[in-house]
Image (tube, rainbow, N blue to C red; front, top):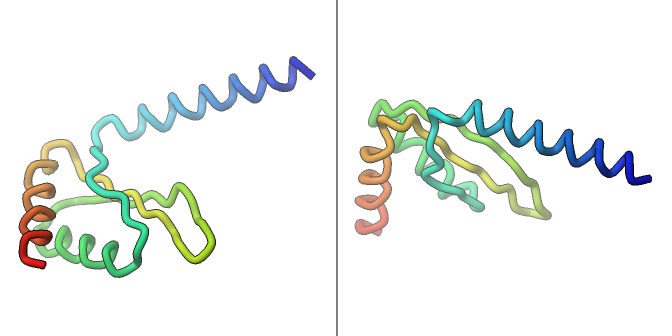
Amino acid sequence: MYEVIAVLSLLFVIYSLIRSYQNRKWKLISSCLEQDEYSNLITMLKLSGIPYKVQVPSKQYKHTQYDIYVKIEDEIRAIYLISIDSTIR
């Protein structure tokens, strides 16, 4: 039983290291739970020419969490766009 737990723990650590290595050049700028918020943010990034990627780490009942990442060099521009959008609303 302990061997199974040890193997699963090791697999989880390896998976976490691979994920962090893949995302080392990307920065999380927002986690959205609502489809409208997600759509608005993606539209802003597209219109501004900021490359992005989306990961869906969890799907809950009636809600899906969207994690939106931008490249590190575009992080300040993306955060500025989000802050402008939130002050307009």
